[in-house]
Each structure stands twice: as C-alpha cells, then as structure tokens.
Length: 162
Image (cartoon, rainbow, N blue to C red; front, side, top):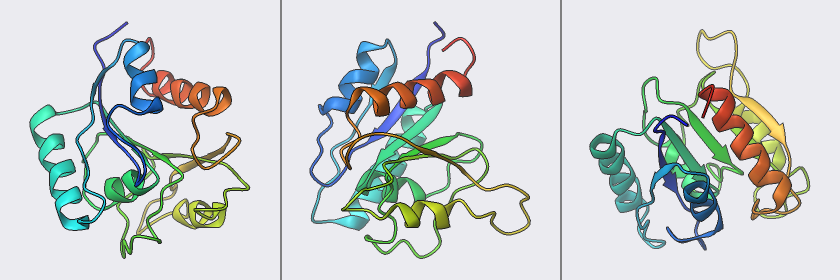
C-alpha cells in the first residue's frame, strides 16, 4: 500500500480519536486530525489550514462541521472527501469544491440536509463538472459499515493501489 497521508477534520461532536480517523489509521493510512475548537470557527479553519500546509496530505477528509471547514480553504490539486458537509449551517458563503471533491451523505440525514450536498455538486464557475455525490450510510454520523466502506472505496479509487 502506498504511503497515503490524510488530513481528517472532525465534526462538532467528533474528536481526533473518533470512529472515522481510527478506522482510517487501522487501514494503514497516516492520519493527522487536529482538534477543531467547537466554539471558534476562525481558529478551526486556521488550524486546518496550518495542518494542511505543514502535513502536506494527499487527501483531506472532513466530516459534518469538519466538512464545512474543508470547504472554507483551498487545497489546490489535493482532493477533498466531504462527509455530510455542514457548510450552510456554518455559514460558508463560497464553498471551495471542484471535480476532485467527493461527497458522502446519508439521504435521510436529519442534521444536515441531503439537498445541501446536491446543491454543492452543481458545477462551479467555468467547470463542466462539479463534485461527485455518493448516497450511503444509515445516519448523520456516517460511521456504519456501509459509509466507512464507501469512504475507503473513494480513497482507493483516488489513489489506485491505496
């Protein structure tokens, strides 16, 4: 397996030691997951950006509020995987996504509307294609076997052999 580095941005109720980053570590990936303070949006974005610049990940994964944080700063050609991204809830005016972005979302999510992810997948600016949306999971937490399996599939398809 290649040495894939993942920057994981946890949700409002999540932690750097949560189910998803732990799962990714168990799969053999190098994962950095900074603490994102729940009561300070600007500091959360700054920490995420600092980690991105210093760790130089191959993929950024953001879950819920962490997905919103991931849409708040550019990652260049580094792909993003957003899990039920709460960008509207946290007021991200111009989310930064593109055709290298994949969104995983449970269709009946009661905390972050699935329709928000549909909207996020519309092509932006002069791009022909927007992000890809994959419906999966059984709840907003997206920590069930199906959702984790889909996360792994997206990582593997992004990096063949990963």
